[in-house]
Length: 238
Image 1 (cartoon, rainbow, N blue to C red):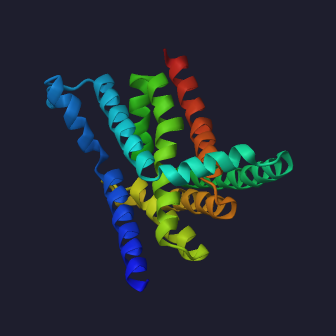
Image 2 (cartoon, rainbow, N blue to C red):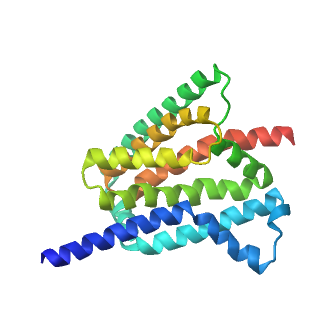
């Protein structure tokens, strides 16, 4: 019995590490269309870079969805069968913590803007992709990326970190850390604060609801709210 439990635990850890590595190296999927269409990587247009980014997101999403399909299907069924009172209660709970997350982010951005610190590298990169293809990037950021991150940083992490505090803190800090991974200026490390706060709040929502649908909806709506002003600003320029 103990041997069987050890095998299950080992399998869980292997899957967890594999999905985390998949997230970190998902850009490698771009090699497929680059090879098929013989693209010159040194002279790629921003539009083609956007297509490649979305392609890698779709590949990653398909794989992790298959890996965690049982939990995802079960959560969707549970979400659909939730009675109206419970659903309303859960949505209010999510809205409350999403509003807190948004407040923390805007207060933080305002404070650091007083010191002349601009957007994080992550936000700046996303803006460039949005300019290339607003619709496609909107779909990617709001639907694909949000779901990928929820499956990996919430669902996957919870299979390994069973304790409430350790799960929320570790998943939140790793989530925040990976969002500033590509920084080339140490001053941008300050963005760890809002990203980690977002990760911690989403982790708390997932732990309390025990359903990926709620944290995904919050994450998706959050990305949409941040995306809309960028698209409006782009339309004004055009």
